[in-house]
Length: 68
Image 1 (cartoon, rainbow, N blue to C red):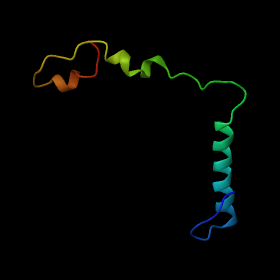
Image 2: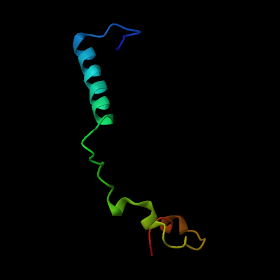
Image 3: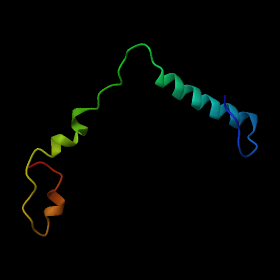
């Protein structure tokens, strides 16, 4: 049950809020066994952090997150 605690929403606003709640509930109750897609390998932070950090120096901040 959904209850409006404060304010006076229009029917359109109430329908939009209810649609969002129902979509979230449907996504949480998936029964098809399908897992969400894995993130792409290029966005994996471990890929970038495989190398040592650069030697300290005036421009070392620019090379901090880029592999050599």
